[in-house]
Length: 165
Image (cartoon, rainbow, N blue to C red; front, side, top):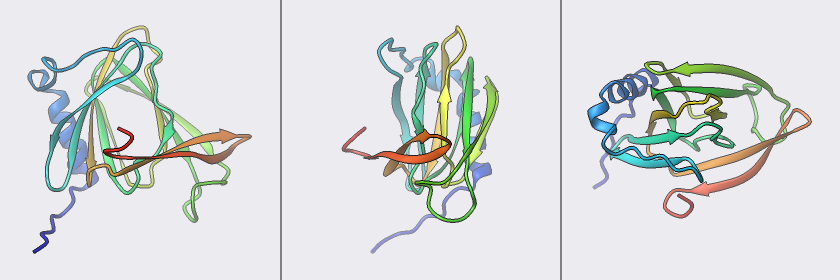
């Protein structure tokens, strides 16, 4: 028999990310910093969500990406991160649409929740390390990576949980 679990709301995800970010005893003994690439580990998994811990040295960043069918939130636990959000039309697919960009600095103690159609890039463009907590519902199964060519969003790669990360 299959069970179904209600997915947390964006507010629930944001609240959970902030609670964990504001509890350094849960993440500080685990966090690591890697000069070669962003470091990450899954902190927890439940039937309807998962929690990830990420560290960011100065200059480290994600590519432009989405989270497949998952909504999410991230909270900065230490340092400052810059989120660049890809603003797309509300209808149609993402590949091949003209986009605009919006940037926001997110400091320790702040969080950002988003729906499943959210496309963004996250960067540590400061001189200090940063740590963030990410919560996704449902758990991530795919992530799509994009490029922007002449103001147009282009699908670059798709990755699957368990195979590519």
